[in-house]
Amino acid sequence: MPDHDDVDYAKRLGAAIRNHRMSQGMSLRALAKELHLSGHGSLVDYELGRRIPPQNLVEGCERVFRISDGALRNLREKALTERADLSTERLLRPPEPETTTAPAVTAGPAVTAGPVRRWTPRRRLVVVAAAVVVLAGLAAGVWRWSSPGTATPSLAASPPVRFGFEDGIERWSPLWGGPRIRYDVSATTAYEGKQSLQITTTGFSNMTDKSLGTTHGLETLRPGMKVTCYLRVPLPERASVRFFAYDSKSHRFWALETPEGGEAQLPSDTAWKRYDWTVPNIDLVHAIGIEIYQFTDDPVILWLDAVGW
Image 1: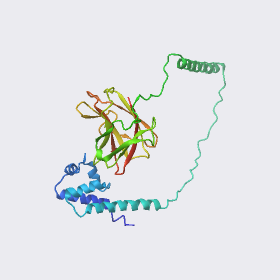
Image 2: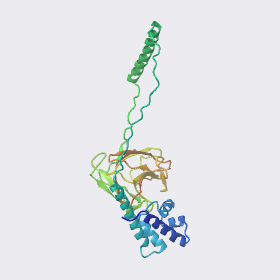
Image 3: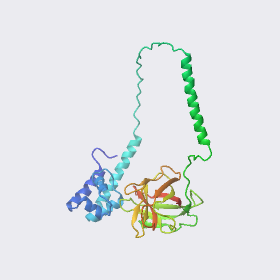
Image 4: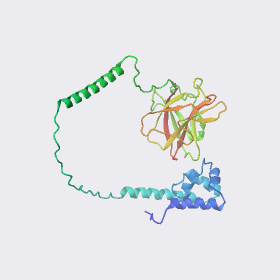
């Protein structure tokens, strides 16, 4: 294994990107714009060696800096190998023995017996009166709860399903990031019925965003109404989602529950999870959709079902 005290290829890669950028007189914002990034915050982490940039970002840097020998890609491969070696080393490292010490026993203060309280007639009367008051309150509460015409708490019912994907994809399609999205109906799992819509996205979202939605079947959907859908993942994914609607001019508006920078996390297990979001205050609901924001280059898989309002 390499000597990790002397070699840090992630920092070397970051320094190389920074040196090339500065030699061309580019700011972080300018480089982010050339790489089609939404912001330059991730570039700071890459240049400082805190994170290893994805393959497509490194290739983009080589294109911008006109590097033809693959030097940045070679550094990235070495950084990934070094990180894998470090992970293996930690796994093979024997656990440190646990040391336990017996708690010290300290002598507490001496307990002295106090005066013995006797049950006088007056004290008995006070205790009985208090018990009667408590029992009367409990009886009144039970009577009120069980009386007819009184509302009792209940779980929120699911609204009527508008898109169950039993007849196909039901005119759902990518709204942006199309080349990075694959979608089709699946009989593998379903929240309701026999089918759901399986969505697979690829590519770190710093490079491209992805969304899926529909412009059909929305005649009864109005601003301020609640939309419900169910999502499931085959395993915990490094991704999150945001919900949105288009107005009559195809301008995008994020749901109140998932504003700009406020994504909702995908389920942490493999069970179906319900998501409720509010249609923004727009003149007309021309489209609704879901954006998938992923923090990995690996494919992200999720199922969508039972969309309703």
